[in-house]
Image (cartoon, rainbow, N blue to C red; front, side):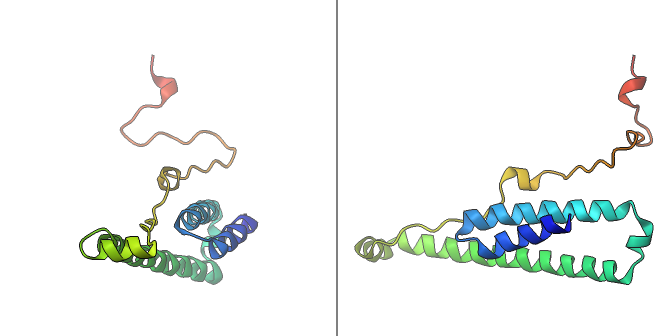
Length: 135
């Protein structure tokens, strides 16, 4: 599990271009989600000061990544607008500038991560019925 996080982090650092970075970011987010889900099953791990520190660092990193993504996309929007409007369009065509790509996470990166520990099916939420109780 830690290997998955390490590999995803390395792929993110080595990504060349917005699309590759988005894919690597999605893999890292999913690996971290699985790691944190496993930690929920072990109360002694959650109580560890080192794990609490790791969770805080991950939260800080997620906030920095979100800010950097927003900053990058704002600059791409400004750049694309400048090279696609008058008079910048003439300079852009003359020197071969092309539209830049926005940084966006693919749909699978936005999906909720499901983790199963191989045990019994979870109990239904209060006020709902389980699929097996319907007739």
